[in-house]
Length: 103
Picture 1 (cartoon, helix red, strand yellow):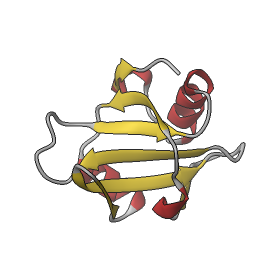
Picture 2 (tube, rainbow, N blue to C red):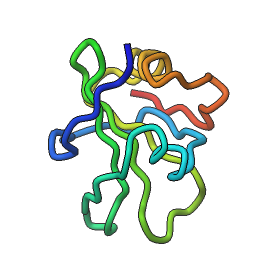
Picture 3 (spheres, rainbow, N blue to C red):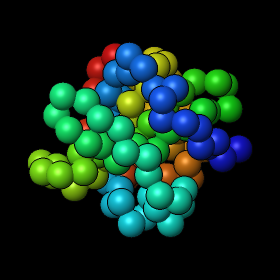
Picture 4 (cartoon, rainbow, N blue to C red):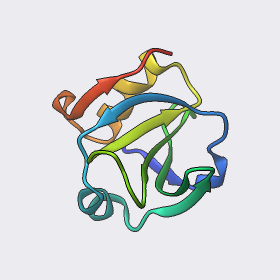
């Protein structure tokens, strides 16, 4: 099963799961243009998804002044469970995981 793209407005109270090696260009080729969401830090490129089990997940990156390349994987689910499912459904290799965050 492939990840299903959903409206970024569905992402609320999410925890960081991992930091992934992913360029905006690659993400756009896979899923189309990102939505731009806002918080106190400013605008974020956001790709939001519903996984096969219903868990919401998103890939986010600051539009301006991102400290390093890549995207944060965020989710409303258990990080230990979400990461392998997202990698599988997105057809990403484990090597894309640059950092993991505890739940």
